[in-house]
Length: 371
Ligand code: ATP
Image 1: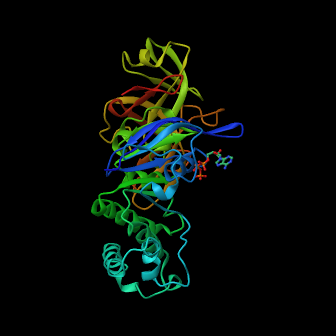
Image 2 (image 1 turned 135 degrees about the vertical axis):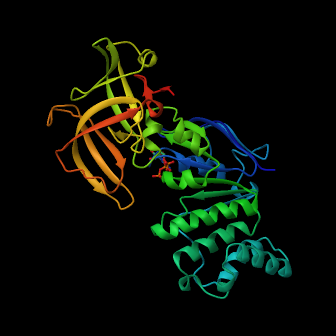
Image 3 (image 1 turned 90 degrees about the vertical axis):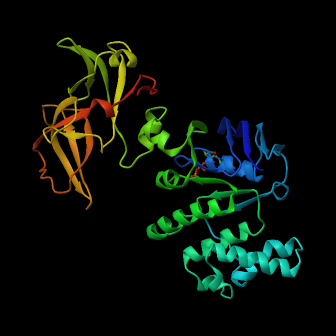
């Protein structure tokens, strides 16, 4: 059993705080991904679990044992890095066998364990080759094999796919997820790629500036982001965030956006975001926005103008400038995902609907207050 617990872990460097009071538990056998932009502290966190770095404050437990100051080789973990450091002069077999030979495991057992791992990772046909005779993806599998052969309770991955091309990355995502299921081990994985996180993780730990912003399963993070920052970080293209001031027009309370567009909110909703005169933000994902007509759902109707179009084959993305007056200062632009066959010419008027059921509302501090 190897759950991993971070208990109020902080790491300071000189004057800065790289990881700030982070607490979370990774369950035994769970696949958890630390996700966040560059510099958010995810690698530092992983390094502390690995034993390559120690917390300034707080404790780390692996399988119930306090390990904050235990050396890496005494932690029952294996680490796979972004840069694949295989021994170039050794065959694939010898590369995978290396940790077992160092641990003086019997020869017959080494052969058996290497074969098992090689079969699982589909590198069996290449056991006699050297690393330069392999593709990038095959090399990455061998590197994972070298980590897996020791049968550690916890696997740590630091952006292991970032050096691969897009197609291979997609394939490896599926394979890593299957590998996790076969091994039944605890996986902790660091990436800044939200697609990787959404497709592989049981739970995602979203980090920003050393803080844990949200820790939840991918679908929950997508559907119920804790705050405006998580909402716009997870999802591609990003959620539209319309910032504005709460105001009343013609007896309706709503959001007055930059550029003058007014988005009336359903009764009771505006109260949750704050008082009239205060700031708030409405969020809507590009795929939830609708074009008026088209049997659009019940929602907030806004007029706009086509600002730019971006056909991507399966979809058409349209940037729409909200409000009546074109070319006004600080105008709000939202992205709409629509049918690739829709005609949308730049400068044309387009009327949008923000369906009530798909709206997010954030208060002045950025916290989600609806749904
Ligand atoms: P990336 O994806 O770019 O690797 P990250 O989220 O993994 O980013 P960290 O590498 O954990 O971020 O760094 C977090 C913060 O701590 C950064 O501001 C970084 O500059 C700082 N930092 C990391 N290691 C050190 C160090 N050894 N000395 C001083 N500052 C450090």
